[in-house]
Image (cartoon, rainbow, N blue to C red):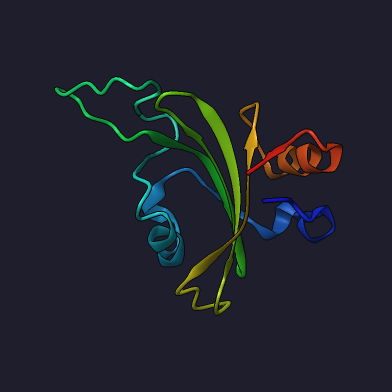
Length: 131
């Protein structure tokens, strides 16, 4: 999937609330991510392909989500046979109600990012791998 940089830029950081707990995401995002069990930021997750049966943990971990009124950026890491970082951009179908979230784009990142500004810089510099 290619990223339309003109549509993705700029993300105004002031328009987003940063969230680091899955349960605090809007209902639309919880539904969109239902098939991807994810640990909260900083919590244990399964980074490799071996699952500890005594302490099973999800294969994904939230780094941060930037939640706006009409959209959401989510940055997370994914474990398994390979470890990588993902940035995904969703739009809500009904701003204000946000009952459903539609995936607009998703890209791989080689690095863990800390902020919306970091996402802007990564996209504008062209340092992304597209799905």
